[in-house]
Every structure is written in structure tokens, then in C-alpha cells.
Length: 172
Image (cartoon, rainbow, N blue to C red; front, side, top):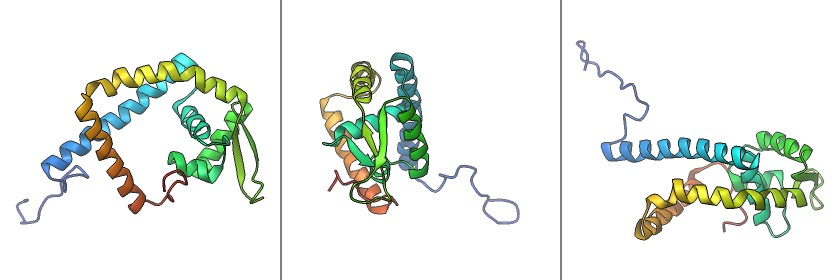
């Protein structure tokens, strides 16, 4: 408290969290920010693609047709539609994806995985998975890994309940 009796606002925007919440949130944020940086660096160095490229390619290869509307792709990877639209145009210029118009809704743009995109993902995946194992998964034993996965699945469900993006079609 200050001399005039008013409480001084804490400098941290997370000052309203208790100690355990603060520890968990800061630990998550440190890992989140660092792992995205390191995965992007690893992919660029080893495969010449960005983490954003990889996210798009994985989402497309996960679809049975290898084709999603920009809106569905944004929902699946948790991206902003307009930013993603610009990104997939750059990927199309590199031959990783093709852009088109939806057969069911002529107003919707589609993104389709190309043969080159599929080959690029297949070439990038082994080194990327190895990095993820070394830098992240190997820090947890089998029980911790199972508990961690369960915790993240519950958090993801909560994000779907309270977030602004619709539920992805592949996550009923």
C-alpha cells in the first residue's frame, strides 16, 4: 500500500494469479514461446520450410482429401483467417499447395496439398519428430507423458468452450 492508503497496482498483468497458477502459467509460456522458436529454426535449417508451413501441411495431410477451405484450415490450426490466406498464397507460389474455389460454396477458397507439398512434409518429418522427441518428449517419463497429454486435452476442450474459433470438424 502507498502512503495515501491506496493499493499499488502490481506491475505484472498476472499478479492476480496465486503462486501455483503463476508458476504453471509462466512455465507454460516459457515452453510455448521457446518451443515454437526452436521448431521453426529446426525446420528452416533442416528442410527449408517454416513452422507455419509445417502446420498447414500437417493439417492438409490429416484430411482424407488433402483439401480444406481456408476457414476450416484456420479453425484446425488455430490461425487467423486473413493471415493464413496470405500465407497459403505464398505456399502456393512455392508449389506446396494449390488454391481453388469450393465446389459446395463458391465464396469459399480451398487449399489443396500438392505432390510437392506431400513430399516436402515427408522429407521434413523425420528430423522434426526427432527434434520434438529430444527437446520435449524425452523430458517426461511414460506416466508423466500420459498425465501431460490428459491435462492438455482438458485444457484444449476448455479453450473450445471459451474461445472464439469454432470446434474443428475433426474434433467432435
